[in-house]
Amino acid sequence: MLAKKTDAKKILLSGVKPTGRPHIGNYFGAMKQFVDLLNTGKYDCYFMIADYHGLNFIQNASEMQKNIIELAIDYLAIGLDPKKCVLFKQSDVSAHTELAWIFDTITTMPYLERAHAFKDASMKDKEISVGTFNYPMLMAADILLYDTDIVPVGQDQKQHVEYTRDTAQKFNRIFGETFKTPEAFILEDVKIVPGTDGRKMSKSYDNDISLFATDEEIQKAVMTIVTDSGLTGGIGIPTNVYAIHELIRDKEYLDKLYTEKQGRYKDLKEALIRDLQDFIRPLRDRREKLAKDRKKVIKILEKGGKQATKKANEILARAKKNIGVIFK
Image (cartoon, rainbow, N blue to C red):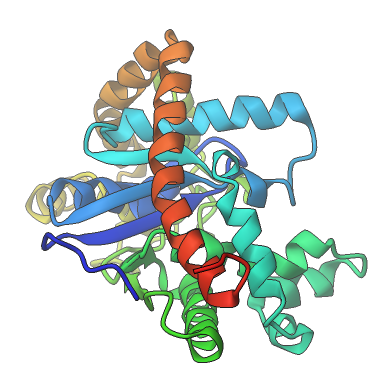
């Protein structure tokens, strides 16, 4: 039987791979929404550092360790309070990989071959790892182990949750009611943040602005922004500059500024530089303070791992009873 919740809160889970430092596109595309959702008080939140998923990309121990700690610090710096949520490493909860194997036994290869990530990888590399091919089952385990109600994702990531829902429903049909069927929480208002070259901001394009950039790095990045104009509000307004600026300033302020400085791209870039510096500075200061006490960060992860393990083991035991490997 599925456990009944005794309170009105829904369970929210999100996972991020520790594959590098975040940029402002990551922040406004997802990270800020995590903080906003946590602070509503409506959800029991689990935020997972998906280090086993990261193994598909990082196969160097020192790099992995560094990235895990850095991502944990990033999370804390943006305002994910460990007193209000569970922040943990995927690898600290062995139930994830155990449940993934159980799901493997009811999943066909043709089904996994339809996954977007597999299709993308197969177009680039003929020798795809089993981890890349099988990642939807590990992701399904990640989500279903916590009786998760909602998973915040962008529209382009909706398939991840659909695979999880399919897996839960198939398992329930075969072995009896076991898993909740989670819903994708689509972040509708999230805009695609352009990089300095006008394409979607991405580290792979080398067009990003780091979320914790120094004042000098911000200035250098903004001054390289491509200044196409005429597509946002009229002639003389640099589209890419405006698109980044509107993330941190309200429309009334921007309308006045971009009218007064119309066609004066250098002045508008300098205004964006100042506003980005003012926005990023407190985040960077908070992060620098946290980075000085890495032992504290590790303890937060260890505590979160124990909390997550307790919850996940309860759900795993339910599944193991229903498949018949635990005697009832």
